[in-house]
Amino acid sequence: QVQLVESGGGLVQPGGSLTLSCTASGRNLFIGTMEWYRQAPGKQRDLVGAMTSGGSASYADSVKGRFTISRDNAKNTVYLQMNDLKPEDTAVYYCNAAIRRSYYDVTNKYWGQGTQVTVSS
Image 1 (cartoon, one colour):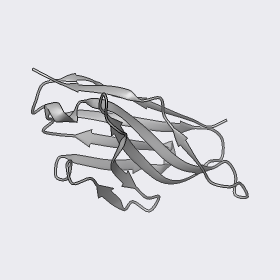
Image 2 (image 1 turned 90 degrees about the vertical axis):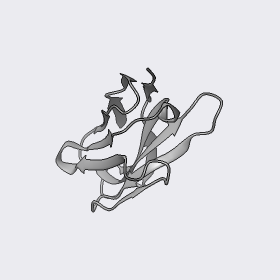
Image 3 (image 1 turned 120 degrees about the horizontal axis):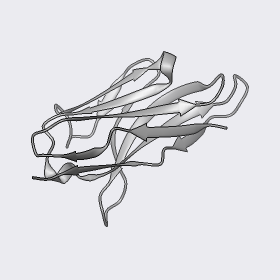
């Protein structure tokens, strides 16, 4: 069974920093693109950024220059380094990963449970 577990959320003041992590658990996983989304109260879930298995990253315009995605393939983990946080970054952050459970398996997309990030003074 595949699970994505996020951690690192919390309360931070404007201008502060947080690093989120998301780890995929399971045996012999083939992990493709890993993504970060966020959902603010009353709003849709939006893509924050993504990183391919080869290390190519892309970002939403709203976070470019402030957020950085990285991953450790040996640990099946993706990170989201968030700097210069703003109140409008407040949301539940979710990771999503395209995973095959074996070489012959089909690719499915899995979601983490989400972690709350609150930016407030």
